[in-house]
Length: 276
Image 1 (cartoon, rainbow, N blue to C red):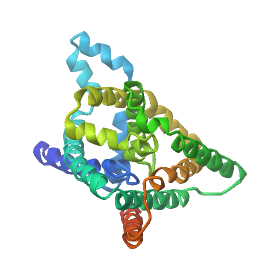
Image 2 (cartoon, one colour; image 1 turned 120 degrees about the horizontal axis):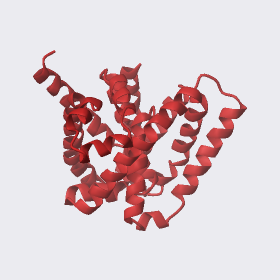
Image 3 (cartoon, rainbow, N blue to C red; image 1 turned 135 degrees about the vertical axis):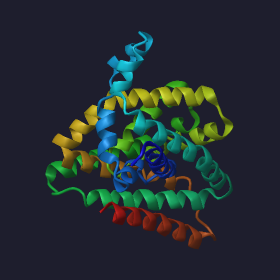
Image 4 (cartoon, rainbow, N blue to C red; image 1 turned 90 degrees about the vertical axis):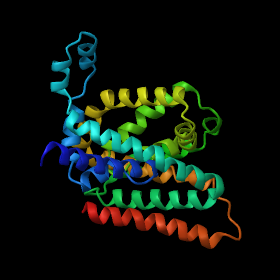
């Protein structure tokens, strides 16, 4: 594969990952796995570290470039950012004009993702059940903190970026889901559409920090304590279902809400089918 073909190949994968990252319940990491670049992506990310930053200020660009997989990161990043920018407008419009149906769709995505993730746990034992319950209580309690619904301070945006970007390394968890859990999802989408650079820069700094700080830890956690980590993640997803459920208004449109939920379930299972 020549460099031009490889560039557009990674660009296409980035576009698909970007669309997935905007939708809660579909993991960009899963798309990377389905399209065959997950191992290279994780390996490249694991090489990122804070000690590389001084090389830029010292002008050692050649040494810095040897440590970074630019052939992967540049086209992939362009594709992801392009999809997020254009697709976020569609989601924002749906949230404004059809909030109940849209959140029903999110509910189906998250519920089915939790079920899929549950099947990845090799065995169910007391230890796993305990961590599942702890994950549920943690997410449920966060979803109940109403102050996060009206507080979009820069420290929270920074923290949200750090946690959301780390989600791409976790099986079945999407960054959009984390933002939804933290009640920052719609605010970030609006910031993308409005080109609110203050928010976007802080979010990006948080994302970079998250990659540098958490990527190795998450990789270690999934390698050494995979069953426990997956059980806790299932609990988090189930507990977080309260967040979209609070945004749904039931009434004469119940049929549409059910269809939207089933559509979310169907999409996750189709993606999982390709994953398998």
